[in-house]
Length: 339
Ligand code: AKB
Image (cartoon, rainbow, N blue to C red; front, side, top):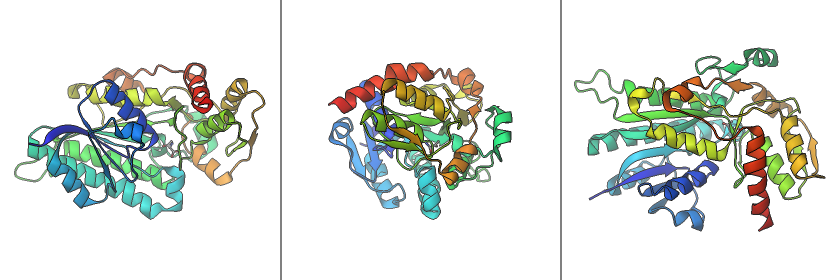
């Protein structure tokens, strides 16, 4: 007999770690992970089985399918926006072809055990592309269907995969004698920049915020690569993971969309800098704008409209800007580096 499990891809990344912890703490069903690298021992202990390899490896996916009955997929594996600009073809392979393989894998899995497979997909504010700063400032809180013209490979990948997921959920093989859509219950959130106290992200363009905090906490110098007036939405990691879990448990009939904006706080880089300096007086934080990465951040909205997420499934982040820094980020990071 195959065992019912939750599959997490990209489990060794920063969302993956928090998700494993929260699922394990809630006594949720057994977790199986797939990542390019072995999990850290503390996380490996919380899962029933760890597969090391690529989401693009069809043989490996078949092996997982043959051993486990997957009820839910959290598909977190991706190359982020900065890294994707250096290797756009690899980004497409991982972000798009990998996602397509996972969707098809979930479809087959659902057909085999006769229940829909829940498929949670983190998309991103990178799915937006505002043409210039004046438009960004005028636009304010951007709605899901506006400005869907991303300028990065990663943003294009995310936007397209949201559409692929919607296709599997609603239209899969619509001309077949026995259409099979709805077997993949695809649900997606557009995350803002996520800030975790436990991990420093790599390869993203919103990384300046977490990098500033972690560098200051370790007493290392840091030159912020965007202008002080740069503003995009951010969210504390615990709220990001809560959102994924809450969306996963929402009744399907309540959902009016397959991709939802999420918003928590949207400080300027200068405001983040001030908050970090307040906590780590004397920190060596300076400014050195990288014109090209600045261009990417300037194309992302300064805020997003998340009314649909709040109305349909009760999204309600716990942390605003001050609360996130003073009650979560700073104390947890201080404790972490003190060890
Ligand atoms: C990135 O910077 O690429 C990500 C994102 C905003 O999706 N953090």
